[in-house]
Length: 252
Length: 252
Image (cartoon, rainbow over all chains, first blue to last red; front, side, top):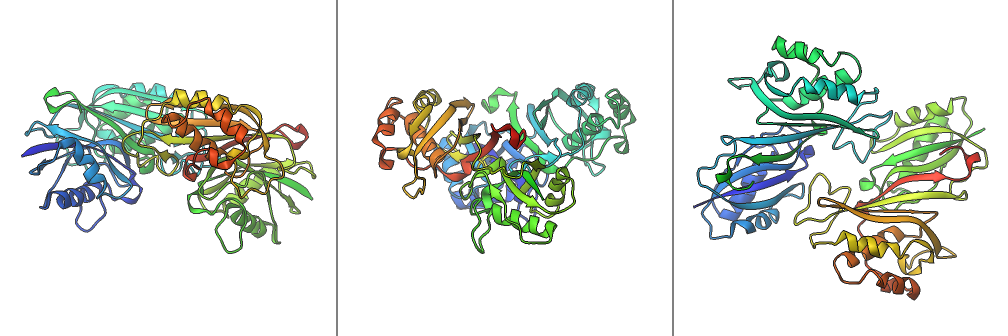
């Protein structure tokens, strides 16, 4: 038996999120089908990030146990031949047999993209949220700094969360503008349900002057979802990267 | 009567190109329908660039004559309410009554995007051509320099062209790489049928070492379509910008 790690990229537009749901199109469901077809038995992957419906990934991580005599590096090609075009395995290799992508320390990087212009740009609208109201990216960046470090992010978490603790650590966050495109880049060791999208929605409130940058501190302290901004649309969100810190898991 | 200029952006994926064709989905056809609905009479636009099927635009230009009592700047909003989401009017204003977007000097900028990696990236595949063979962007850039200036581009033109002359001027061209994405950016006063896509296909041949950068000179001199590389796929191509030099046409 070999535990195989997969680097998975996908366009989330047509999927009801990563997590498997019976009879519903999900990334995990497609992965399970392709791997089961390859292995000739029922296989279920373990994913690192259960991204929401409509959210994209350039690199999510999934692992499964293979009983085949196949070079781990060749699994990517074999699976891509069995997967729809909007899911691609960008790399595959063996990891230690007890490697679990949700139980190992890692840094995840999410990018939230906003088209901030009078009208939307059709070639960007699948992968960005369109905001016609002028946003001040410098103010958004200033507001974002208050989220750096370890905090109770209860205000920035869906009330439907099942997490025991809402304390999380953001290791890096920044907001930048290039012409009519604003990018929120946030890195952290883990994120709560809807957390990045609520952060994006709240930073947009700061960008349009509904709240001041310093109000982020008050919102954090309130530990109350209703104090933060709206949950930004899923299509603007992309899981860019996951880096595992536990090196025995391989240089993922 | 007022001649109105429209800045048009579109995702060309679902369209059979810009140019109107009876009973076929085209950008021009959609523009004509929306404007005719607004004006309450049959209207036909004049477009600047008749982009191919599947090619995108961040800024193409179209003009039409309005007999309505509407502020030219408000036409964009009125048309966006009548157009499908994958076509957006990003700006509208009045120009002189004899302004013709194909008869005025302009500089057009096209960008051709290539994903050059082992596997494609689903979030990029609608807007880039995927090439798994390693490409040397520096070699492509060196090759591109031979295309700068005024040349007979007969080798870089579809044999189905109806152009009287195949002499055109490229005012700027460059190839750059950022991680796994290669961008060919080319500016010129006008382009022949399929010209940018044939340039892209030929530069890819240089990038993979099928031809040397200096061979571009020989290909140009041959004035023979069969000497150049293949026509690169349409989805990698985007009309980025059109700037008119004749200022009486407005600062387009």
